[in-house]
Amino acid sequence: MTREADVVWSLVEMADTLVDDYDVVDLLTGLADRCVNLLGVSAAGVMLASPEGSLGLVASSSEAMRLLELFELQAQEGPCLDAFHTGQRVGHENLQSGSGSWPSFSAAALQAGFQSALALPLRLREATLGALNLLSVTPTPMDEADVIVARAFADLATLSIVQHRAAAEAQRLNEQLSSALTSRVVIEQAKGVISERAGVEPAEAFSRLRAYARNHNLRLTDIAQAAIDGTLDPQSWAPPPRSAPS
Figure 1 (cartoon, helix red, strand yellow):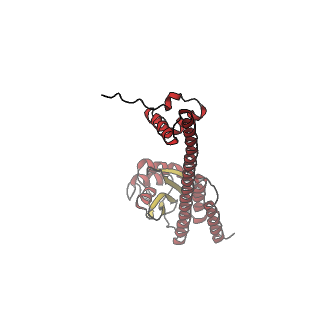
Figure 2 (cartoon, one colour):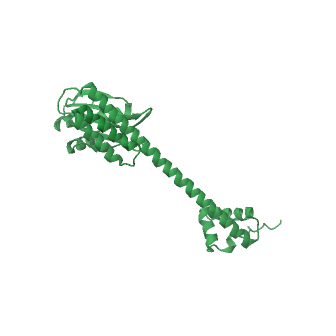
Figure 3 (tube, one colour):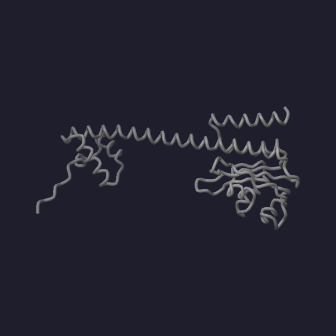
């Protein structure tokens, strides 16, 4: 296939993650590998932010890149961090040991054989999820057409991650809703049990059940299940003692 066909096919493969279940690490490792194979860069790495906002290395195209990305995180300087914190593209920069925008990172990168760097944020609207680091063993800037393709790869990966997180959140909410509905059924059954055994109205049965749970710092659903199972002391739903008249 031609290079253009390879790029299009790569975009199609990445788009599949929008509808299929997938592994985020596998997706981003594929992103790094595609950048190296199709865009002429020597190495690529991807960092993602944790829910607390700190960056962590998720994928790299080589062991040398992995070690350099870990150094970048430790030194807290480098193109990937700048792209993440600004949400903007960090343009091509020739690395100079001990100087430039990232003196410590540049020295480590040069020692690893890299001479230039470019980074792109993984960003959707106002949310920046991470960054893509692209390094080269030559000082020659990336062709702008290749940068546009890298941007397309990064944007599609970002969209996939957002979709994945939204699906996970929807699943979590569905599980919470299902749990709440199940709990309500258990509580209604317990109300019936207590109402019958204590000879009180369902509303009063619920009040006693709730009061017992609160007084003993227990979950209402657990107390309700115990009432249904017959493992709750009948005195548990007895009415609270009345205060003696003064």
